[in-house]
Every structure is written in C-alpha cells, then in structure tokens.
Amino acid sequence: MRPNPRRRRAEKHELAYLISRAQANRDDMQAEATERKAFLAFNQAFRDRDAVSHEQFVAELETSLRLFEAGPEQARSAATEYAQIIDYPSDLEALYHLNVSTVLGLDLVRQWMHDVANFQEGKPYTSHVPWERLYTEAVQFTQ
Image (cartoon, rainbow, N blue to C red; front, side):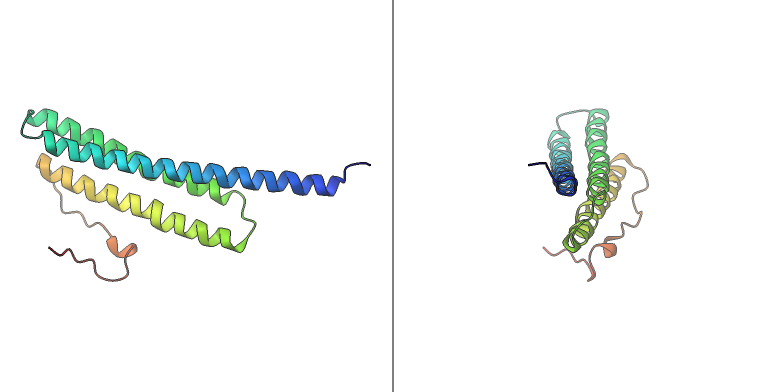
C-alpha cells in the first residue's frame, strides 16, 4: 500500500499549522512573563529607593524599562508568528485578541511606565498614553 501524496501534504500542512500555533503561544507567554518581570523590577526599584542613591534608583528604573520595552517586542513576534498560517476563521479572532490585548496592551503599559520613570527623573512626563485605544469607555481610577 503506497502512501497518498495528497494526504501527506495535508498532514505536513497540519503539522506546520500546529507548530506555528505552539510557537506563537510560547512567544505570547514569554511576553507576558517579561512584562511580569518588568513590574517586579519596577516595584523593587521603588522598594529600594530610600536605601540607595538616586543614581542607583534611576539605574534600577532604567533596567525595568528595558524589560517593559522587551515585552511588546516579544508580543509582536508572537503575533507575527501566529499570522503565518491562518487556516480557520477562529484564527483571525485569536490574532485580533493577541494584537489588542497583548501587543497594544503591553505597549500602552510601556508608555505609561516611561512617564512614571520620567517623573522620577525630573524629565517631562505628561505625554498622552492613548488608553482609549484599548478601552472604549473612559478610564477612571477610583480609590
């Protein structure tokens, strides 16, 4: 019994599809993990602020900002990987949510954290972070 070439092509395509999905999910989780590390480093900088020099505090903030920069880049890589093979309509929805919730969300957080760090460093810090791109309703912080 000889293998059916059409079936083999379909199986290879399905395997490539599954590998692509797995790699995209891995990259997305890595972006989320990087974002968590950035928040932890940012938090630690503020915890250490009174115990270290201002220069050391700023250096710790800058270290966390580099992680905030890496997160969106990793998310964009995940979205690019996910877009390589689109086979099902649900893939488009998943790609949309990956772009909005992960890529855009991490980028907005990155911008916001830069403003917080700029305030701490005495730099201009009033740039507009377009949260309205992510939230359709007005964002209100309550206490």
